[in-house]
Image 1 (cartoon, rainbow, N blue to C red):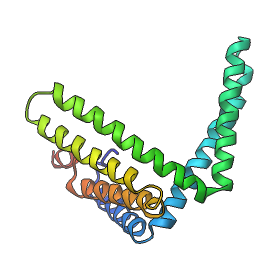
Image 2: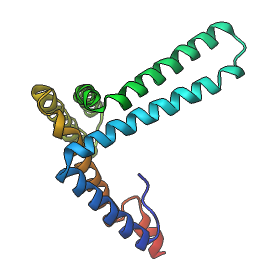
Image 3: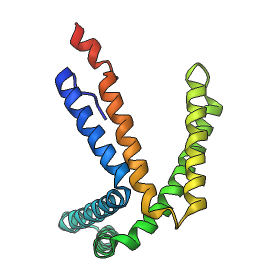
Length: 175
């Protein structure tokens, strides 16, 4: 997330992110359902977009694959919208697996990196891996809180980044 150059916009954005993060942590179940419903809505929009672009394809096989892709997005998105609680279980399982894959990639990057950032990348990989293992080890019992809580923590981190003025926004303002 890019950091706005304006100090007042950074502070406003940071406060809004803090409030959203707090709400996600206090109400993790509602946050997880909102994330799940948002995911379903995005899938329906993506499927609709794929269908709308079918006319621009001349090749029959390409058109068939685009149609299959569109139907997969639409059916999956509609299922998620109709059954958001059941879908939250699947998305939590996916989240745990995604965290483990990301951890492996971070650890591989740390193994090939050199310099001062290597330890930060290594720490990121280890922490991400531990989170992935914790999510998968407690699945499906953690479904009702883990997505909302992790999302809230991510919003908190983004808020503190806004307050710190990372990305050089504060340097640009001082010039």
